[in-house]
Amino acid sequence: MEEDKLNSKAQFGTTTDIEIAASSIKTIDVTFKKAFKSVPTVVCSIRSGTTNPAYGSINAFVDYSSVTKTGFTIKVANGAASGVALKPNVSWIAIT
Image 1 (tube, rainbow, N blue to C red):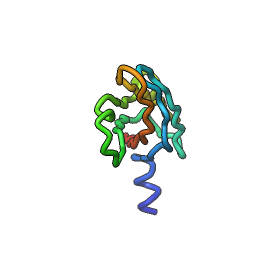
Image 2 (cartoon, rainbow, N blue to C red):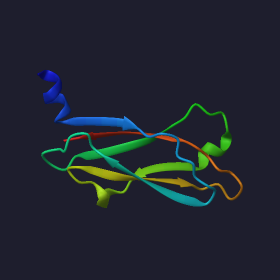
Image 3 (cartoon, helix red, strand yellow):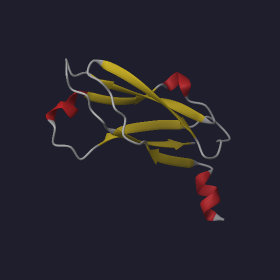
């Protein structure tokens, strides 16, 4: 039963590849497997094993106004000036 107790306070995941064109922002909606009792704090980070220096132009962040007891929205921005489409994953954790 300890696992159920932990899952009620924290959940985490990683997205599939997110293809994002240069100079654009893409949104990804995440739904929690189990609704929280209160709105959690959510953080996210780019996850990649690339050696491509263009990945320095990628940012991932939580749309803070979207966080609810049931999910949230990730925004991924590709700040590369042109021609570089990238496919990062985003890992996230939500904690109450």
